[in-house]
Length: 475
Image 1 (cartoon, rainbow, N blue to C red):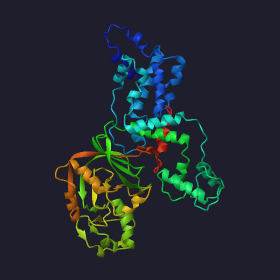
Image 2: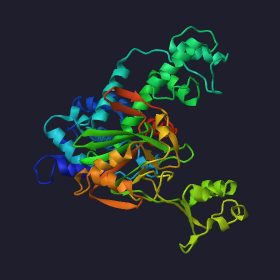
Image 3: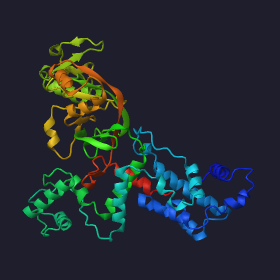
Image 4: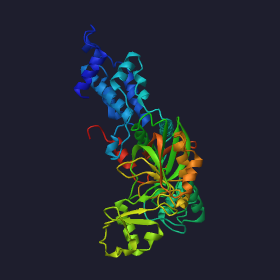
């Protein structure tokens, strides 16, 4: 710990002029085993007690001039990590914007010492979100379970029914079916059941996502819990009286009010090469019958090749072409194939209608990523289990119902009026009377009515967080 932090605590705990021998008294404040108990308690939160001088403190004690500095450094470091997270969220999620938790650690330590609760002092700093506490309980159960061997399935090409492979034997062992080395009907039924239980596409194909789930043994599950407990430590205690939580990894949108879930909607998120970013913002308005102003990058990458293959698609799909001055251009007069690859000198927008990429509604929280929630004309995709199909925005199932919920505290906007506007074709903006916070998260462990669920790490983001948690101080 920096000398300034030690001095700050000395001054706060033993003010000058108190008539106490501050140096002698300060060297005794951590006497006993309470600090050791507190440091050991961080293991229950997925942190490693050895990161906080535990071995040194056990060997040399917690009192005396030198060891008191170790003791204070251990407590302050552990307190900071359990309250705010060991990692800076920006180090692994560059777009992170959530405000984070607040706590006066020095004041908390002083109070704990004064009332003799040092051994429980770190526990009191942990997040109290129900999801965090449920994951913490799940971690405790898995840490206490007898050790067992994990059956690993090697990565490789997708395995299909009828395949013969040594890898099939590992799958059969993992699923506790007869080991034949042949992907037979018994194995297929077990694979499909396993996929359903783990939120995967129940197609019977053993691809990368299914292999990852099959390899989620005891140690992998513990690591996944540690990673997601850390993610919760980055979030503020108050997410908003009314707020929206999007979980990218779980393809879900939740509407929360007064500490409970009011609504849950399916979501379609960004493809693995157009990942939906993680950030927090606030919903300010909703647009019914929206025009779709096609982002320039999508116009170059997607629409230009489409129009080159099929110029009639411009009118058929309801697109409008504008020049740099914003004037409408006759699309039939444009030679799309004459435009250099990757060049789009026009603005492209799509009129409201059945084919509009945004569907009937978009839910807006203006941000630099140009990401928002919206409807989609491709509603059949919600029948899929894994839904990473978008260009980064969040396509939302039953968005009109979510719009009604968002506007429920905005005067004069009931469902009848919403439906009336949707019956027309005019773009209409509705400002919320109070902004609703929205948190776009990436959680690969989910707590719900069914208990704790482990979901697929679709963007391979867990590894960076786990590596940071395992990194020793100073490394």
